[in-house]
Image (cartoon, rainbow, N blue to C red; front, side, top):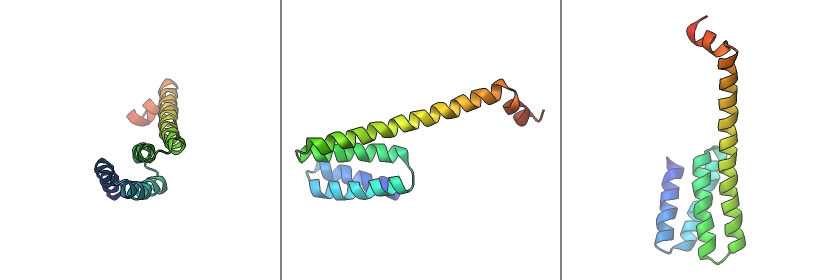
Length: 103
């Protein structure tokens, strides 16, 4: 919740053209998201920091932030696919059903 509040603070700062505040608070939110492994927050914070970099005229840094956001989504999708494939395999061989229904 604290990191989410920081992200909202950074978004508000950016909307008010308080670019330095948005960058500083956004960087703190990103650190927390990375340390606590919260991919959704990492994604959103990278997007925010990309917008901050754009406003600052740093298109290279903005592109890197957007790439980091995209990579976060790709990792989440791979994780979901792996989890889904493993669940499908467990149901297919009957092990999940036997564990679930005590068979």
